Amino acid sequence: MLTRIDHIGIACHDLEATVAFYRETYGFTDVHYETNEEQGVREAMLRINETGDGAASFIQLITPIREDSTVAKWLAKNGEGVHHIAFGTDGDVQDEADGIADKGVRVLYDSPRRGSLGSRITFLHPKDCHGVLTELVQKSS
Amino acid sequence: MLTRIDHIGIACHDLEATVAFYRETYGFTDVHYETNEEQGVREAMLRINETGDGAASFIQLITPIREDSTVAKWLAKNGEGVHHIAFGTDGDVQDEADGIADKGVRVLYDSPRRGSLGSRITFLHPKDCHGVLTELVQKSS
Image 1 (cartoon, rainbow over the protein chains, first blue to last red):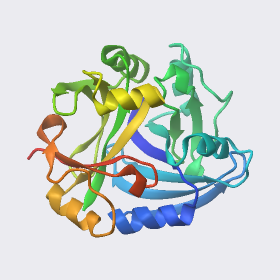
Image 2: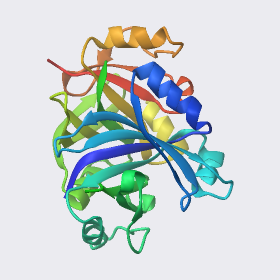
Image 3: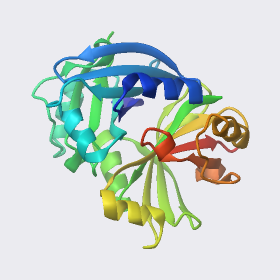
C-alpha cells in the first residue's frame, strides 16, 4: 500500500544555490546529502513534514554529476523543474511494483535499486502514468 | 511558516480517466471535486496522507474547462504532467507571501484567491523558484 507522498524530485543546475533558495525562502531544512553514482546525480533532501505513517515528506533536489546521466539530458531538454514524484510504501517495494505491473503499468527496474537514505526504490514509466515519472520508495527500516 | 506539502498539482486531458488511474493503480481516494471558474479548471483532490501539522497532502488533478485557460495552454505545450507544487501555511497566506516577496520572489496575485476546498491561495513565479510553479495554501479553518 502507498501511504505517503515520500518526496517531490526537482532537477536543478546548481545544487548548493537551489538548496540555499529553499532554505532561505521557505525556511526548510536540508537534512541529508548524497551522491548516487549509478544514477549520475548528487542530491539534497529537505524535510518538509512528518506523515501519518510515521515517515516524512521531502523535497529532493537533484543535479547531474556527469553529462550522460538521464537527469542531465532531462535538464537540457526541459530546464529546471519537477522531475518526478515519489510515493512511500508500507511494505516491500517489489511487491507493490508487481501489483502495479499487473495493472498494465511498466516498471522501469527489474529489481529495486538503492535510493536516498538507504531506501529501496523503483520507477514507473511516465507514459503509463499520465505523463508523471513516478517512483516507489520503501524507506530504510 | 510552511508546514507541509499541501498538494502536487497534475494537469491532465481527461479528469475522470486520470482519477480512475490513481484510484485503481494506487488505491488512492478521490475525496473532492470542484470547478474553479476563475482559473478555468475542473479538479479532483485525492487524499494521500495525514501531515504532522494536522492537515493532509493531496494529489490535485486539474483539467481545463475552456481553451483559453492557462492550464489548457500549458497542456498544449507540455503534455500531461506535474503543473505545480503547493506548500501549506500555518498562518495567513498573504503574510507568508509578503515575507517571501521581501526575499525577491515575485508573487503572482495581488491578494489571495479562492483555492480548493475553500482555501486561500497565491502563486510564486516559477522563474524565481528554479523552474517550479509554487503555490502557497492556507486551508479553510
